[in-house]
View: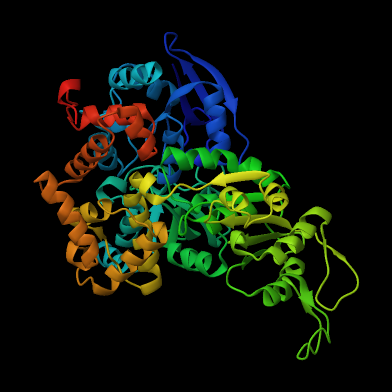
Length: 141
Length: 447
Protein backbone atom coordinates (compact mmCIF):
# COMPACT_ATOMS: atom_id res chain seq x y z
CA UNK A 1 0.00 0.00 0.00
CA UNK A 2 1.16 3.52 -0.76
CA UNK A 3 -0.28 6.88 0.18
CA UNK A 4 0.06 10.11 -1.74
CA UNK A 5 -0.04 13.66 -0.42
CA UNK A 6 -1.09 16.35 -2.90
CA UNK A 7 1.56 18.97 -2.21
CA UNK A 8 2.42 22.55 -2.93
CA UNK A 9 6.05 23.03 -1.94
CA UNK A 10 6.34 21.69 1.63
CA UNK A 11 2.65 21.76 2.59
CA UNK A 12 -0.59 20.14 1.50
CA UNK A 13 -1.81 22.03 -1.57
CA UNK A 14 -4.76 24.18 -0.48
CA UNK A 15 -6.67 23.08 -3.57
CA UNK A 16 -6.07 19.60 -4.97
CA UNK A 17 -6.29 20.76 -8.61
CA UNK A 18 -3.40 23.19 -8.08
CA UNK A 19 -0.99 20.73 -6.40
CA UNK A 20 2.50 20.94 -7.88
CA UNK A 21 3.59 17.46 -6.83
CA UNK A 22 2.62 14.20 -5.19
CA UNK A 23 4.67 13.07 -2.23
CA UNK A 24 4.43 9.32 -2.05
CA UNK A 25 4.96 7.20 1.03
CA UNK A 26 5.01 3.42 0.98
CA UNK A 27 3.51 1.71 4.02
CA UNK A 28 6.10 -0.12 6.07
CA UNK A 29 8.69 2.54 5.36
CA UNK A 30 6.93 5.69 6.49
CA UNK A 31 9.39 8.03 4.89
CA UNK A 32 8.68 10.39 2.05
CA UNK A 33 10.16 8.41 -0.77
CA UNK A 34 9.20 9.85 -4.05
CA UNK A 35 8.19 13.20 -5.35
CA UNK A 36 6.31 13.20 -8.62
CA UNK A 37 6.11 16.66 -10.16
CA UNK A 38 2.79 17.58 -11.71
CA UNK A 39 2.61 19.96 -14.65
CA UNK A 40 -0.26 22.46 -14.24
CA UNK A 41 -3.55 21.81 -16.01
CA UNK A 42 -3.67 18.01 -15.70
CA UNK A 43 -7.14 16.51 -16.03
CA UNK A 44 -8.61 14.37 -13.25
CA UNK A 45 -8.09 11.30 -15.43
CA UNK A 46 -4.41 12.07 -15.98
CA UNK A 47 -3.98 12.48 -12.23
CA UNK A 48 -5.73 9.16 -11.63
CA UNK A 49 -3.38 7.48 -14.08
CA UNK A 50 -0.37 8.78 -12.13
CA UNK A 51 -1.88 7.59 -8.84
CA UNK A 52 -2.60 4.17 -10.33
CA UNK A 53 0.92 3.89 -11.75
CA UNK A 54 2.30 4.35 -8.24
CA UNK A 55 -0.30 1.93 -6.80
CA UNK A 56 -1.65 4.62 -4.50
CA UNK A 57 -4.50 3.46 -2.29
CA UNK A 58 -4.97 6.54 -0.09
CA UNK A 59 -4.81 10.19 -1.15
CA UNK A 60 -4.40 12.94 1.45
CA UNK A 61 -5.28 16.33 0.01
CA UNK A 62 -6.64 19.81 0.58
CA UNK A 63 -9.91 21.15 -0.84
CA UNK A 64 -11.16 18.97 -3.67
CA UNK A 65 -14.29 19.21 -5.80
CA UNK A 66 -16.94 16.54 -5.43
CA UNK A 67 -16.36 15.61 -9.07
CA UNK A 68 -12.61 14.99 -8.69
CA UNK A 69 -13.19 13.09 -5.47
CA UNK A 70 -15.77 10.83 -7.10
CA UNK A 71 -13.49 10.19 -10.05
CA UNK A 72 -10.58 9.24 -7.81
CA UNK A 73 -12.71 7.11 -5.48
CA UNK A 74 -14.15 5.46 -8.59
CA UNK A 75 -10.60 4.23 -9.23
CA UNK A 76 -10.68 2.61 -5.75
CA UNK A 77 -8.41 5.20 -4.18
CA UNK A 78 -9.56 6.41 -0.79
CA UNK A 79 -9.59 10.22 -0.59
CA UNK A 80 -9.11 12.06 2.71
CA UNK A 81 -9.80 15.66 1.73
CA UNK A 82 -9.83 19.15 3.24
CA UNK A 83 -6.55 18.72 5.11
CA UNK A 84 -3.97 21.41 5.70
CA UNK A 85 -0.51 21.65 7.18
CA UNK A 86 3.09 20.77 6.46
CA UNK A 87 3.60 17.47 4.66
CA UNK A 88 5.65 15.86 7.40
CA UNK A 89 3.05 16.78 10.04
CA UNK A 90 0.11 15.49 8.01
CA UNK A 91 1.94 12.24 7.16
CA UNK A 92 2.89 11.79 10.83
CA UNK A 93 -0.73 12.53 11.82
CA UNK A 94 -1.99 9.91 9.37
CA UNK A 95 0.32 7.16 10.60
CA UNK A 96 -0.35 8.08 14.25
CA UNK A 97 -4.16 8.08 13.69
CA UNK A 98 -4.28 11.72 14.72
CA UNK A 99 -5.77 13.34 11.65
CA UNK A 100 -8.89 14.00 13.73
CA UNK A 101 -7.10 16.91 15.35
CA UNK A 102 -8.84 20.15 14.25
CA UNK A 103 -5.48 21.66 13.38
CA UNK A 104 -5.36 19.38 10.32
CA UNK A 105 -8.64 20.61 8.80
CA UNK A 106 -9.15 23.57 6.55
CA UNK A 107 -11.37 26.20 8.20
CA UNK A 108 -15.06 25.34 7.94
CA UNK A 109 -14.47 21.84 6.61
CA UNK A 110 -14.46 19.65 9.69
CA UNK A 111 -18.27 19.33 9.67
CA UNK A 112 -18.13 18.25 6.04
CA UNK A 113 -15.51 15.65 6.90
CA UNK A 114 -17.57 14.29 9.76
CA UNK A 115 -20.61 13.90 7.49
CA UNK A 116 -18.47 12.05 4.99
CA UNK A 117 -17.02 9.83 7.72
CA UNK A 118 -20.57 8.92 8.82
CA UNK A 119 -21.58 8.25 5.24
CA UNK A 120 -18.57 6.01 4.67
CA UNK A 121 -19.07 4.17 7.90
CA UNK A 122 -15.93 5.42 9.62
CA UNK A 123 -16.61 5.60 13.32
CA UNK A 124 -14.78 8.79 14.21
CA UNK A 125 -12.38 11.23 12.68
CA UNK A 126 -9.77 9.82 10.26
CA UNK A 127 -8.19 6.66 11.54
CA UNK A 128 -5.13 5.24 9.87
CA UNK A 129 -5.81 1.65 11.00
CA UNK A 130 -9.42 1.77 9.82
CA UNK A 131 -8.36 2.87 6.38
CA UNK A 132 -5.50 0.41 6.27
CA UNK A 133 -7.99 -2.32 7.08
CA UNK A 134 -10.28 -1.12 4.29
CA UNK A 135 -7.43 -1.06 1.86
CA UNK A 136 -6.23 -4.53 2.83
CA UNK A 137 -9.73 -5.83 2.36
CA UNK A 138 -9.88 -4.17 -1.04
CA UNK A 139 -6.56 -5.74 -1.92
CA UNK A 140 -7.88 -9.22 -1.23
CA UNK A 141 -11.15 -8.88 -3.08
CA UNK B 1 -17.47 52.87 13.94
CA UNK B 2 -16.41 49.21 13.74
CA UNK B 3 -20.03 48.16 14.18
CA UNK B 4 -21.08 50.46 11.35
CA UNK B 5 -18.43 49.12 8.97
CA UNK B 6 -19.41 45.54 9.75
CA UNK B 7 -23.07 46.38 9.20
CA UNK B 8 -22.27 48.01 5.89
CA UNK B 9 -20.12 45.07 4.80
CA UNK B 10 -22.84 42.60 5.78
CA UNK B 11 -25.36 44.40 3.63
CA UNK B 12 -23.25 43.93 0.50
CA UNK B 13 -24.15 41.02 -1.79
CA UNK B 14 -20.49 40.41 -2.69
CA UNK B 15 -18.13 38.54 -0.38
CA UNK B 16 -15.59 40.87 1.24
CA UNK B 17 -12.64 40.08 3.48
CA UNK B 18 -9.55 41.94 4.62
CA UNK B 19 -6.13 40.59 5.53
CA UNK B 20 -3.21 41.93 7.54
CA UNK B 21 0.46 41.81 6.54
CA UNK B 22 0.68 38.11 7.49
CA UNK B 23 -2.28 37.17 5.23
CA UNK B 24 -4.45 36.54 8.27
CA UNK B 25 -8.12 37.42 7.83
CA UNK B 26 -9.17 40.44 9.90
CA UNK B 27 -12.77 40.82 8.71
CA UNK B 28 -15.15 38.57 6.82
CA UNK B 29 -18.66 39.62 5.78
CA UNK B 30 -21.90 37.64 5.62
CA UNK B 31 -21.82 37.10 1.84
CA UNK B 32 -18.29 35.71 2.20
CA UNK B 33 -19.66 33.25 4.75
CA UNK B 34 -22.41 32.17 2.36
CA UNK B 35 -20.17 31.76 -0.68
CA UNK B 36 -17.32 29.92 1.07
CA UNK B 37 -19.42 28.01 3.62
CA UNK B 38 -16.95 29.14 6.32
CA UNK B 39 -18.35 31.06 9.29
CA UNK B 40 -16.85 34.38 10.36
CA UNK B 41 -15.73 32.85 13.66
CA UNK B 42 -13.81 30.14 11.83
CA UNK B 43 -12.38 32.50 9.22
CA UNK B 44 -11.04 35.44 11.24
CA UNK B 45 -7.43 34.92 12.24
CA UNK B 46 -6.89 32.14 9.66
CA UNK B 47 -4.72 32.29 6.57
CA UNK B 48 -6.80 33.68 3.67
CA UNK B 49 -5.81 30.89 1.27
CA UNK B 50 -7.09 28.24 3.66
CA UNK B 51 -10.42 30.03 3.96
CA UNK B 52 -10.99 31.02 0.32
CA UNK B 53 -9.52 27.81 -1.16
CA UNK B 54 -9.09 29.24 -4.66
CA UNK B 55 -7.12 27.51 -7.40
CA UNK B 56 -4.77 30.51 -7.60
CA UNK B 57 -3.97 30.70 -3.88
CA UNK B 58 -0.83 28.53 -3.81
CA UNK B 59 0.79 29.51 -7.09
CA UNK B 60 -0.51 32.92 -8.19
CA UNK B 61 -1.98 34.67 -5.16
CA UNK B 62 -3.87 37.72 -6.41
CA UNK B 63 -3.72 39.53 -3.07
CA UNK B 64 0.05 39.05 -2.96
CA UNK B 65 0.27 40.57 -6.45
CA UNK B 66 -1.70 43.61 -5.27
CA UNK B 67 0.38 44.00 -2.12
CA UNK B 68 3.68 43.66 -3.96
CA UNK B 69 2.84 45.91 -6.92
CA UNK B 70 0.22 48.22 -5.43
CA UNK B 71 -1.96 47.45 -8.47
CA UNK B 72 -5.59 46.50 -8.16
CA UNK B 73 -6.99 43.38 -9.78
CA UNK B 74 -10.53 43.79 -11.10
CA UNK B 75 -13.03 41.04 -11.91
CA UNK B 76 -10.64 38.16 -12.43
CA UNK B 77 -12.44 34.81 -12.64
CA UNK B 78 -11.00 32.08 -10.43
CA UNK B 79 -12.44 28.86 -9.01
CA UNK B 80 -12.91 28.19 -5.32
CA UNK B 81 -13.93 25.00 -3.51
CA UNK B 82 -16.55 25.74 -0.88
CA UNK B 83 -16.89 23.87 2.41
CA UNK B 84 -19.37 21.45 0.79
CA UNK B 85 -16.86 20.44 -1.87
CA UNK B 86 -18.54 22.40 -4.67
CA UNK B 87 -16.29 24.06 -7.23
CA UNK B 88 -17.61 27.58 -7.85
CA UNK B 89 -16.47 30.21 -10.33
CA UNK B 90 -16.05 33.57 -8.57
CA UNK B 91 -15.11 36.96 -9.88
CA UNK B 92 -12.54 38.57 -7.58
CA UNK B 93 -11.20 42.08 -7.20
CA UNK B 94 -8.40 43.21 -4.88
CA UNK B 95 -7.06 46.49 -3.52
CA UNK B 96 -4.66 47.72 -0.88
CA UNK B 97 -6.09 48.49 2.56
CA UNK B 98 -4.80 51.76 4.02
CA UNK B 99 -5.37 53.51 7.32
CA UNK B 100 -6.36 57.17 7.71
CA UNK B 101 -2.72 58.26 7.32
CA UNK B 102 -2.40 56.44 4.02
CA UNK B 103 -0.19 53.70 5.37
CA UNK B 104 -0.81 50.23 3.93
CA UNK B 105 -2.18 47.97 6.65
CA UNK B 106 -3.14 45.01 4.52
CA UNK B 107 -5.33 44.23 1.54
CA UNK B 108 -8.99 43.75 0.76
CA UNK B 109 -10.59 41.23 -1.56
CA UNK B 110 -14.15 41.22 -2.86
CA UNK B 111 -15.59 38.23 -4.66
CA UNK B 112 -18.87 37.38 -6.35
CA UNK B 113 -20.32 33.95 -7.00
CA UNK B 114 -20.85 33.75 -10.78
CA UNK B 115 -21.83 30.07 -10.94
CA UNK B 116 -25.39 30.90 -12.04
CA UNK B 117 -24.12 32.96 -14.96
CA UNK B 118 -21.60 30.22 -15.80
CA UNK B 119 -24.30 27.51 -15.66
CA UNK B 120 -26.64 29.52 -17.86
CA UNK B 121 -23.88 30.31 -20.33
CA UNK B 122 -22.97 26.64 -20.51
CA UNK B 123 -26.61 25.71 -21.09
CA UNK B 124 -26.96 28.31 -23.83
CA UNK B 125 -23.68 27.58 -25.57
CA UNK B 126 -23.81 23.82 -25.00
CA UNK B 127 -20.10 23.76 -24.20
CA UNK B 128 -20.19 20.73 -21.95
CA UNK B 129 -17.01 19.04 -20.81
CA UNK B 130 -16.72 15.55 -19.42
CA UNK B 131 -16.80 17.24 -16.00
CA UNK B 132 -20.47 17.89 -16.75
CA UNK B 133 -21.22 14.17 -16.94
CA UNK B 134 -22.33 13.43 -13.44
CA UNK B 135 -21.56 9.95 -12.23
CA UNK B 136 -19.67 7.96 -9.69
CA UNK B 137 -20.74 4.57 -11.01
CA UNK B 138 -18.02 2.18 -12.11
CA UNK B 139 -19.58 1.70 -15.53
CA UNK B 140 -19.35 5.43 -16.22
CA UNK B 141 -15.87 5.68 -14.67
CA UNK B 142 -14.69 3.05 -17.16
CA UNK B 143 -16.15 5.22 -19.91
CA UNK B 144 -14.43 8.35 -18.53
CA UNK B 145 -11.11 6.48 -18.65
CA UNK B 146 -11.54 5.99 -22.40
CA UNK B 147 -12.67 9.52 -23.30
CA UNK B 148 -9.26 11.25 -23.59
CA UNK B 149 -7.93 8.52 -25.90
CA UNK B 150 -11.15 8.56 -27.91
CA UNK B 151 -10.92 12.35 -28.18
CA UNK B 152 -7.28 12.22 -29.26
CA UNK B 153 -8.03 9.84 -32.12
CA UNK B 154 -9.64 10.87 -35.41
CA UNK B 155 -11.64 7.67 -35.85
CA UNK B 156 -15.41 7.54 -36.09
CA UNK B 157 -17.17 6.93 -32.79
CA UNK B 158 -20.40 5.03 -32.22
CA UNK B 159 -22.31 5.85 -29.03
CA UNK B 160 -24.89 3.28 -28.16
CA UNK B 161 -27.39 3.63 -25.35
CA UNK B 162 -31.06 3.98 -24.56
CA UNK B 163 -32.83 7.25 -25.15
CA UNK B 164 -32.00 9.82 -22.45
CA UNK B 165 -28.69 8.28 -21.37
CA UNK B 166 -26.66 11.33 -22.39
CA UNK B 167 -25.25 10.35 -25.78
CA UNK B 168 -25.11 13.94 -27.02
CA UNK B 169 -23.48 15.08 -23.77
CA UNK B 170 -20.74 12.45 -24.23
CA UNK B 171 -20.34 13.49 -27.89
CA UNK B 172 -19.93 17.12 -26.80
CA UNK B 173 -17.45 16.08 -24.12
CA UNK B 174 -15.36 14.19 -26.70
CA UNK B 175 -15.42 17.30 -28.91
CA UNK B 176 -14.38 19.55 -26.00
CA UNK B 177 -11.51 17.20 -25.08
CA UNK B 178 -10.23 17.09 -28.67
CA UNK B 179 -7.98 19.46 -30.58
CA UNK B 180 -11.08 20.47 -32.57
CA UNK B 181 -12.71 22.10 -29.53
CA UNK B 182 -12.35 25.63 -30.90
CA UNK B 183 -14.29 24.72 -34.03
CA UNK B 184 -18.00 23.91 -34.34
CA UNK B 185 -19.85 20.99 -32.85
CA UNK B 186 -22.82 20.32 -35.13
CA UNK B 187 -25.58 17.93 -34.04
CA UNK B 188 -28.06 16.42 -36.49
CA UNK B 189 -30.94 14.14 -35.56
CA UNK B 190 -31.17 11.79 -38.53
CA UNK B 191 -34.58 10.45 -37.46
CA UNK B 192 -36.20 13.88 -37.42
CA UNK B 193 -36.12 14.57 -41.16
CA UNK B 194 -37.29 12.75 -44.31
CA UNK B 195 -34.55 11.66 -46.71
CA UNK B 196 -34.59 14.57 -49.14
CA UNK B 197 -34.54 17.14 -46.37
CA UNK B 198 -31.84 15.27 -44.45
CA UNK B 199 -29.67 15.17 -47.55
CA UNK B 200 -30.08 18.92 -48.06
CA UNK B 201 -29.45 19.51 -44.39
CA UNK B 202 -26.28 17.40 -44.26
CA UNK B 203 -24.70 18.27 -47.59
CA UNK B 204 -26.33 21.62 -48.47
CA UNK B 205 -27.58 22.59 -51.91
CA UNK B 206 -26.71 24.75 -54.88
CA UNK B 207 -28.88 27.57 -56.23
CA UNK B 208 -31.41 26.12 -58.67
CA UNK B 209 -31.21 22.60 -57.25
CA UNK B 210 -34.97 22.78 -56.70
CA UNK B 211 -37.74 25.36 -57.13
CA UNK B 212 -37.13 27.45 -54.01
CA UNK B 213 -33.34 27.12 -53.95
CA UNK B 214 -32.57 30.75 -54.79
CA UNK B 215 -28.98 30.66 -53.51
CA UNK B 216 -26.35 28.20 -52.26
CA UNK B 217 -26.87 26.85 -48.76
CA UNK B 218 -24.02 25.15 -46.89
CA UNK B 219 -24.79 21.81 -45.26
CA UNK B 220 -23.98 20.62 -41.75
CA UNK B 221 -20.81 18.90 -42.95
CA UNK B 222 -19.59 22.25 -44.23
CA UNK B 223 -20.51 23.95 -40.92
CA UNK B 224 -18.65 21.25 -39.01
CA UNK B 225 -15.47 21.71 -41.07
CA UNK B 226 -12.43 21.02 -38.84
CA UNK B 227 -14.92 20.47 -36.01
CA UNK B 228 -17.19 17.59 -35.09
CA UNK B 229 -20.48 16.41 -36.59
CA UNK B 230 -22.77 14.34 -34.39
CA UNK B 231 -25.20 12.11 -36.30
CA UNK B 232 -27.82 11.07 -33.77
CA UNK B 233 -30.25 8.18 -34.36
CA UNK B 234 -28.24 6.92 -37.32
CA UNK B 235 -30.04 3.57 -37.01
CA UNK B 236 -33.22 5.25 -38.27
CA UNK B 237 -31.82 6.39 -41.62
CA UNK B 238 -33.19 4.93 -44.86
CA UNK B 239 -31.14 2.46 -46.96
CA UNK B 240 -30.61 5.19 -49.58
CA UNK B 241 -29.24 7.61 -46.99
CA UNK B 242 -27.04 4.87 -45.56
CA UNK B 243 -25.39 4.50 -49.00
CA UNK B 244 -24.69 8.26 -49.12
CA UNK B 245 -23.28 8.28 -45.61
CA UNK B 246 -21.08 5.30 -46.43
CA UNK B 247 -19.56 7.25 -49.28
CA UNK B 248 -18.96 10.27 -47.05
CA UNK B 249 -17.21 8.04 -44.53
CA UNK B 250 -15.18 6.08 -47.05
CA UNK B 251 -14.08 8.83 -49.39
CA UNK B 252 -14.41 11.83 -47.07
CA UNK B 253 -16.23 13.67 -49.84
CA UNK B 254 -19.83 14.68 -50.51
CA UNK B 255 -21.83 16.48 -53.18
CA UNK B 256 -24.34 19.21 -52.35
CA UNK B 257 -27.78 18.79 -53.95
CA UNK B 258 -27.60 20.11 -57.50
CA UNK B 259 -23.80 20.25 -57.36
CA UNK B 260 -21.48 18.53 -59.80
CA UNK B 261 -18.24 18.68 -57.87
CA UNK B 262 -17.32 16.62 -54.84
CA UNK B 263 -16.35 18.56 -51.75
CA UNK B 264 -13.80 17.18 -49.36
CA UNK B 265 -14.77 17.37 -45.67
CA UNK B 266 -12.67 17.43 -42.54
CA UNK B 267 -15.19 16.76 -39.79
CA UNK B 268 -14.79 14.29 -36.96
CA UNK B 269 -17.84 12.03 -37.15
CA UNK B 270 -19.57 10.81 -34.00
CA UNK B 271 -22.68 8.69 -34.48
CA UNK B 272 -25.25 7.50 -31.99
CA UNK B 273 -28.17 5.15 -31.83
CA UNK B 274 -30.59 3.96 -29.20
CA UNK B 275 -31.14 0.78 -31.20
CA UNK B 276 -28.88 -2.26 -31.36
CA UNK B 277 -27.23 -1.68 -34.74
CA UNK B 278 -25.76 -5.18 -34.85
CA UNK B 279 -29.29 -6.56 -34.51
CA UNK B 280 -30.47 -4.21 -37.28
CA UNK B 281 -27.64 -5.52 -39.49
CA UNK B 282 -28.79 -9.10 -38.80
CA UNK B 283 -32.36 -8.11 -39.71
CA UNK B 284 -31.09 -6.51 -42.92
CA UNK B 285 -32.26 -3.03 -41.87
CA UNK B 286 -28.82 -1.47 -41.56
CA UNK B 287 -25.93 -1.85 -44.01
CA UNK B 288 -23.19 -4.07 -42.68
CA UNK B 289 -20.43 -2.09 -44.43
CA UNK B 290 -21.69 1.18 -42.90
CA UNK B 291 -21.93 -0.48 -39.48
CA UNK B 292 -18.27 -1.50 -39.61
CA UNK B 293 -17.34 1.98 -40.83
CA UNK B 294 -18.97 3.71 -37.88
CA UNK B 295 -18.18 1.04 -35.30
CA UNK B 296 -14.46 1.86 -35.06
CA UNK B 297 -14.73 3.07 -31.46
CA UNK B 298 -17.89 1.97 -29.71
CA UNK B 299 -18.94 3.35 -26.34
CA UNK B 300 -21.98 1.91 -24.61
CA UNK B 301 -23.80 4.21 -22.18
CA UNK B 302 -25.52 2.35 -19.33
CA UNK B 303 -29.18 3.11 -18.58
CA UNK B 304 -29.93 4.98 -15.37
CA UNK B 305 -31.38 1.86 -13.69
CA UNK B 306 -27.86 0.36 -13.86
CA UNK B 307 -26.32 3.38 -12.15
CA UNK B 308 -28.87 4.13 -9.44
CA UNK B 309 -26.10 5.37 -7.14
CA UNK B 310 -25.94 8.43 -9.39
CA UNK B 311 -29.52 9.53 -8.69
CA UNK B 312 -28.76 11.73 -5.61
CA UNK B 313 -25.92 13.41 -7.58
CA UNK B 314 -28.12 13.97 -10.62
CA UNK B 315 -30.98 15.29 -8.50
CA UNK B 316 -28.59 17.74 -6.85
CA UNK B 317 -27.32 18.81 -10.28
CA UNK B 318 -30.81 19.39 -11.70
CA UNK B 319 -31.85 21.35 -8.62
CA UNK B 320 -28.87 23.66 -9.07
CA UNK B 321 -29.61 23.99 -12.78
CA UNK B 322 -33.31 24.81 -12.30
CA UNK B 323 -32.47 27.17 -9.43
CA UNK B 324 -30.31 29.08 -11.91
CA UNK B 325 -32.82 28.92 -14.76
CA UNK B 326 -35.90 29.78 -12.71
CA UNK B 327 -34.23 32.08 -10.20
CA UNK B 328 -35.28 29.97 -7.22
CA UNK B 329 -33.40 28.78 -4.15
CA UNK B 330 -34.60 25.23 -3.53
CA UNK B 331 -32.29 23.37 -1.17
CA UNK B 332 -32.90 19.77 -2.23
CA UNK B 333 -35.26 16.81 -1.85
CA UNK B 334 -36.35 15.40 1.50
CA UNK B 335 -35.65 11.78 2.40
CA UNK B 336 -39.15 10.53 1.51
CA UNK B 337 -38.98 12.11 -1.93
CA UNK B 338 -35.49 10.71 -2.46
CA UNK B 339 -36.75 7.25 -1.51
CA UNK B 340 -39.46 7.58 -4.20
CA UNK B 341 -36.89 8.69 -6.76
CA UNK B 342 -34.61 5.77 -5.87
CA UNK B 343 -37.44 3.24 -6.19
CA UNK B 344 -38.23 3.99 -9.83
CA UNK B 345 -36.73 2.31 -12.91
CA UNK B 346 -36.57 5.34 -15.27
CA UNK B 347 -37.36 3.89 -18.69
CA UNK B 348 -36.75 7.43 -20.02
CA UNK B 349 -33.41 7.55 -18.19
CA UNK B 350 -31.79 10.84 -17.17
CA UNK B 351 -34.10 12.94 -19.33
CA UNK B 352 -37.07 11.50 -17.44
CA UNK B 353 -35.43 12.29 -14.09
CA UNK B 354 -34.78 15.84 -15.31
CA UNK B 355 -38.45 16.21 -16.28
CA UNK B 356 -39.56 14.89 -12.89
CA UNK B 357 -37.41 17.47 -11.10
CA UNK B 358 -38.56 20.26 -13.43
CA UNK B 359 -42.19 19.36 -12.66
CA UNK B 360 -41.43 19.31 -8.93
CA UNK B 361 -39.93 22.80 -9.25
CA UNK B 362 -43.26 24.09 -10.53
CA UNK B 363 -45.28 22.46 -7.74
CA UNK B 364 -42.89 22.84 -4.82
CA UNK B 365 -44.01 25.50 -2.35
CA UNK B 366 -41.22 25.07 0.22
CA UNK B 367 -37.42 24.97 0.12
CA UNK B 368 -37.33 21.17 -0.12
CA UNK B 369 -38.99 19.02 -2.77
CA UNK B 370 -41.38 16.67 -1.00
CA UNK B 371 -42.92 13.38 -1.95
CA UNK B 372 -46.18 15.08 -2.97
CA UNK B 373 -44.34 17.31 -5.46
CA UNK B 374 -43.49 14.17 -7.43
CA UNK B 375 -45.76 12.58 -10.05
CA UNK B 376 -48.43 10.16 -8.85
CA UNK B 377 -47.03 7.15 -10.77
CA UNK B 378 -43.69 7.57 -9.02
CA UNK B 379 -45.24 7.80 -5.56
CA UNK B 380 -47.43 4.76 -6.08
CA UNK B 381 -44.50 2.69 -7.37
CA UNK B 382 -42.43 3.66 -4.34
CA UNK B 383 -45.34 2.97 -1.99
CA UNK B 384 -45.78 -0.45 -3.57
CA UNK B 385 -42.14 -1.27 -2.97
CA UNK B 386 -42.25 0.10 0.57
CA UNK B 387 -45.36 -1.93 1.37
CA UNK B 388 -43.45 -5.00 0.27
CA UNK B 389 -40.67 -4.24 2.73
CA UNK B 390 -43.12 -3.02 5.43
CA UNK B 391 -40.66 -0.39 6.43
CA UNK B 392 -40.52 3.36 5.99
CA UNK B 393 -36.93 4.56 5.75
CA UNK B 394 -36.37 7.75 7.69
CA UNK B 395 -32.77 8.61 6.97
CA UNK B 396 -30.40 8.51 4.05
CA UNK B 397 -28.63 5.52 5.62
CA UNK B 398 -31.92 3.62 5.89
CA UNK B 399 -32.82 4.51 2.32
CA UNK B 400 -29.46 3.21 1.14
CA UNK B 401 -29.80 0.07 3.27
CA UNK B 402 -33.31 -0.63 1.91
CA UNK B 403 -32.07 -0.02 -1.62
CA UNK B 404 -29.12 -2.41 -1.20
CA UNK B 405 -31.29 -5.11 0.41
CA UNK B 406 -33.71 -4.91 -2.53
CA UNK B 407 -30.86 -5.16 -5.01
CA UNK B 408 -29.31 -8.09 -3.13
CA UNK B 409 -32.65 -9.93 -2.94
CA UNK B 410 -33.14 -9.39 -6.66
CA UNK B 411 -29.77 -11.07 -7.26
CA UNK B 412 -30.39 -13.95 -4.80
CA UNK B 413 -27.97 -12.28 -2.33
CA UNK B 414 -25.12 -12.77 -4.80
CA UNK B 415 -22.87 -9.84 -3.93
CA UNK B 416 -20.59 -9.76 -6.96
CA UNK B 417 -23.63 -9.95 -9.27
CA UNK B 418 -25.37 -7.19 -7.28
CA UNK B 419 -22.28 -4.97 -7.48
CA UNK B 420 -22.20 -5.50 -11.25
CA UNK B 421 -25.86 -4.54 -11.58
CA UNK B 422 -25.42 -1.43 -9.47
CA UNK B 423 -22.31 -0.45 -11.39
CA UNK B 424 -20.11 -0.26 -8.29
CA UNK B 425 -16.97 -2.15 -7.33
CA UNK B 426 -17.68 -5.28 -5.29
CA UNK B 427 -15.35 -4.12 -2.51
CA UNK B 428 -17.41 -0.90 -2.27
CA UNK B 429 -20.56 -2.99 -1.94
CA UNK B 430 -18.96 -5.20 0.74
CA UNK B 431 -17.92 -2.09 2.66
CA UNK B 432 -21.41 -0.56 2.43
CA UNK B 433 -23.04 -3.84 3.52
CA UNK B 434 -20.83 -3.90 6.60
CA UNK B 435 -21.16 -0.24 7.47
CA UNK B 436 -24.96 -0.30 7.06
CA UNK B 437 -25.19 -3.47 9.16
CA UNK B 438 -26.93 -5.52 6.47
CA UNK B 439 -26.87 -9.19 7.35
CA UNK B 440 -26.52 -11.64 4.50
CA UNK B 441 -28.57 -14.81 5.10
CA UNK B 442 -26.73 -18.10 5.15
CA UNK B 443 -27.23 -20.25 2.03
CA UNK B 444 -30.27 -22.36 3.11
CA UNK B 445 -32.19 -19.15 4.00
CA UNK B 446 -31.50 -17.41 0.75
CA UNK B 447 -34.42 -16.69 -1.51
